[in-house]
Image (cartoon, rainbow over all chains, first blue to last red):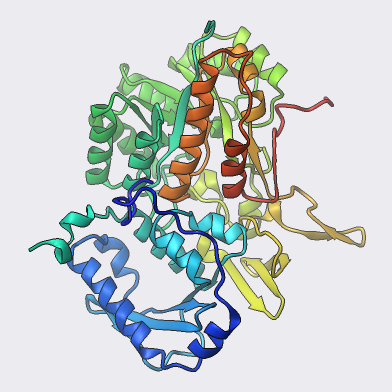
Length: 157
Length: 337
């Protein structure tokens, strides 16, 4: 496996799975703000490591993003403003960009195990809203050069 | 024993991680482009700035691999200098060759940088040995990438009648196979690969979800409607479904991927110099998967062309990443003329 954040675990493959329906039924009723906080914090950590290209970041200014994990019922809405990713607690009716997929597809994307176009062709990932913005985000994440896990701040003592 | 030289495996790189994925998984050569409209994959956030170029070229060269730079769009009136600058930049960076389509640019490159190796892009649309030999005679072109419109016999005819190395496509999304001459995207949006470096630019694309289906619009024109579990293709006019004579179907082309695994021994036998993988717009994951698979297949060829058998695992890996429900041999195997 090349380049993914999980490259230190070359034998780890994420299978395609779908969580049982009751998970999303429960998840839908849980508060959604923790997802937005966690995701924004994670993105800001990546930002701090200067892994995201400035020219692409500029294009995200003031735009709203929704990550919708269908089979967990979890949704995270966030925006990028003045150099930071910020959670949005009352999501707009139509965010500028929405990614929807099951948890396994999102994990496969993050691990660079599957290509977003592949998931899109197979209808496992849907992109709604500003398509060009979607392409910017996709290409920005593709271009990130993940450091080896041992060099991530968490693993340094 | 091996009679023929094995073809070079040429893989796409839209980012530094994709380039590393190609090299690490066995590409002999990678091709890339600048972050601007001098190449035909000018997508937002994709491609290389100068710093990434330097790093990518160093990474490849340190491992004995080659780097080709695609400058394969057509210089637009009044902006020729941008394309000249790209060629000059490629020469300065020390790429192993540039891939050009425009005759004026070929002329510029051959005069300005006589030592720079020139490849004729698929966008140059050279389908006959006369066209290939013209590019060789006039500009010293060393390799030509053939458009995906020729049968294997026709590719062989070209190879037998030219000193120029021939590169063919081995895997990737198929378009309407009118490379270098297609204006469908311009018809819908006013922009096309040859002019702005992108087919059906994302800013014109809208996917609309409604219960049970997804509609695809290109510049407001409804080009397709998919049921929830139906596979989707790239949002281009050629892959849309239209109502013709009372029936709605893929009137131009069904979303399809080219896959030449089955005819690899024939490709080697007729003397193809290089096999190209489409997809600079795809992610490092795709590049790794496809490169790894084709590397294994080409290595297997090295053990004897007659012994070669396509492994089901290779087909499975490639069909997973394919656009469309089917992979075909494209024009290579076409009984009709």
